Length: 74
Image (cartoon, rainbow, N blue to C red; front, side, top):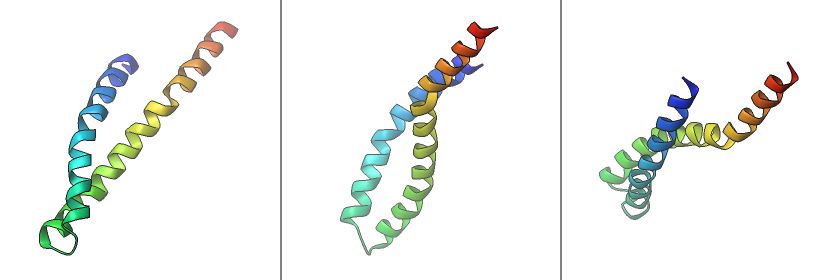
């Protein structure tokens, strides 16, 4: 299960970067308009998703190392 999750979460995180950048540029250049306000609301939700998946992918090597050490100790 974790191998499946790691593979697809990594792919999803990589594919969501491009829409996130486009949305970020939209927020920057359309400030004060209805499009900018809507994009800002979407950006908040997308930012939480990107931060969560990014933190997981950042901590993944440390978690794998900890599990490996724990398995070798047994």
